[in-house]
Length: 393
Ligand code: ADP
Image (tube, rainbow, N blue to C red; front, side):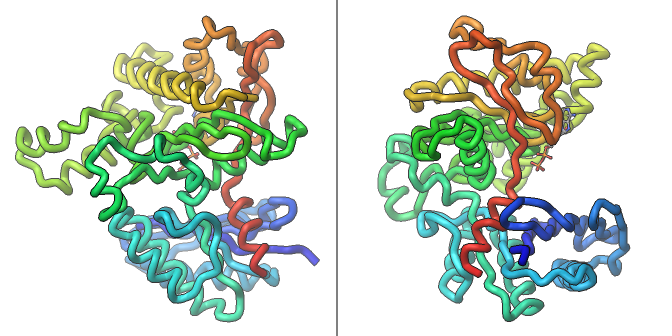
């Protein structure tokens, strides 16, 4: 019998859903309910390769969306064995996936002060899905837990230690399911045990992060207390001078929430280019000579290269540098520009292999004589969530 798992990822205004075979990673159903709470709320999905779209009642919220999703799932005739829920923030409590009970729900709510938009939406998804599927095990898989192996030197900020002890102010790291998938995939590709595999993995999607993984354990990562630190992202600023939020609040006469919105939603590739947060649009515009797009791509790659180079000190047994995520898997330009900074380390790309690497395919893109291998590996976060959830069924 197939071990099929429902995977739910409830965001603040969307619910992504899938039915995943926990053993093969195959997705029989994938879909998204979007614009929840708005007049144009809608639901689209792909079932056995066929695309469908369905309107939701005006201003439909998470509950209406999850009810509609439950009907679609019922129509497939699949008998799921578990439900895996993506949860963004698991603080220091969760070092792995957990079966949902009251104490788990309470902890997710506690950590909502650190990831308010994400954790409360995740929680809503769990509670609604529990009502729809009372007999199935509900399992939470956290973005943060993969990084619970970080040493103190990597996760403590140079702030008064009391802030860590009393308020949990530290680097947590995010995109853990993706970095874990890349680690496991690279171990298979290199034919090594995971515990002997060392990589620097760059997850480049709308959110972006780099992780240093030494012998199967995360030892550093670029996202911090919330998913805002580190790399330039689609609309998020990544590293900036820590004095800036206060300065901007005064200069622009804005509230702390408005500045947070500016740093999270109006910055990054969008802020620099003054055009778009979408890498494809920027690449097209750059070809036409759009100065903002050219600068945004240049800064994105330079920051990324600095992080990868910095993490080489944290990974002495480095096997490979790996690109993943929508940008990492698809953009030969971003990979080429980023890795261009590594020529004097003896790390060079095979131009043809780099251009040939496309979505859904992975492979080695470094030159034969490169001192470190460079790979593209398509990520599959849903599979990690399904596989973890299946272990509780
Ligand atoms: P999310 O973080 O929301 O899961 P994705 O991993 O899907 O996002 O990545 C979205 C990003 O991938 C967007 O910036 C998009 O422009 C970029 N992307 C997707 N396809 C391509 C492509 N062919 N070339 C360049 N960038 C691409």
